[in-house]
Amino acid sequence: MTTNVQSIAEREELLRNVPMLSVLPANLLSEVAANAELRSLDTGEIVFHAGELATDFYILLSGRIQHPEVETAVADAVVRREVTNAGDIFGYAAFVDLNGYRIISATVAEPTRVMAVNGAAFRRVLSRWGKEGHDLLQVFALSYASHEHRIAQKAGWVSVRNAGKVYDPKGKAVVAVDDCSIEIRPGEFCAIVGPSGCGKSTLLNAIAGFDGLTSGEILLDGNLINRPRMHPKPGPDRIVVFQNGALFPWASVRENLIRGPIIRGAMSETEALARARELLERVGLSDIEDLFPGAMSSGMCRRVEIIRAILNEPRVILLDEPFRGLDALTKTVTQTALLELYDLTRKTVLFITHDLEEAIYLADRVFVMTTRPGRFKQTIAIDIPRPRDAKMLTSPEFIRLKEEAIEAVHEEAVKAFAAGEKEFA
Image (cartoon, rainbow, N blue to C red; front, side, top):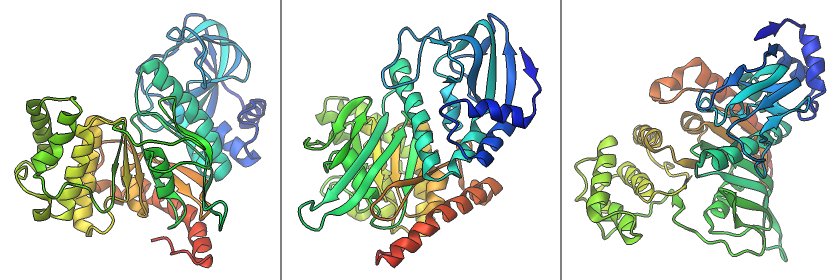
């Protein structure tokens, strides 16, 4: 492999000829070009291996790239056995967070020229571009999540496509959410923030199957679970943890935890109890299995609920402001427990919150919604390594991300306040 030295202007001109990137404003395109380099590759070279951590994505300028693991084209994804067209993009893992591992490998079939673009820098550019950047990022996220699910056989891919919800369509016609699209890849932790009444919980309820859509569709692992005139159904593949809690008050912690897996036949009582005790110990609750919910603090109840959700082996865990109302110390302890359980199980998580600091601390990506009608305004990529702890809350990168989030939501908070909504908290 040889690296070709060219000016930023020359690289920018090449990027301008790539259909998916030509829509970027000139200043942002120039920034992308500054984080790219041209490479000449010889026949037989390995561009990247399956399983390695992704740094760059690639634009084919000339030549031919092969993906040996791909037998045929994958529906709904830009994944082909061969990349042959100038301007085609490959190496989608670099579009996701720091846990973007290559699902397939790429080899050089004949002398080839590519442009390698730093994925983290590209995500930062898109995050500053507002809704247009969010929409473009979703195009890439869809491609990556689709082949991650279908080729790597990973479960928990949530695809929300142009979803809309209108309450009382024949009366006041309150538009709760409008034209919302997000892609959440298997095992990703995403958070949604926005003003009160912007439709965060409406969207979560649609994913959970509690509420139908007026327009658009929602898919789980490529299977349709919600669309207009469909009667969506909740299921054990999507577990919801609510703000007010849902533990059975008449049952002990032990009974609350093991009941679901036993009833579904997923585990024996012995297996369920052993797994429950293991998870309780991981979050510092090893001595409470005989207690009843009424004898525990709110923070302890939330940790038990999260463990119960994990024990039921869902594909997706949906959390609707579960820590709201907890005092600062209890919230920190509970957040840390959630992070530890997430690192242990890597379930797909969608977390609804008003707390910007909480969203950044927990998530891989934060989606910012507009005031009603709720639309996705911006995506903030949280490029902070895991595992995380409370020390990161004072790091320069965390402070930078928090400032970016505050700027993104401030305008929407003002709009919500002016419209008589409750101001963003």
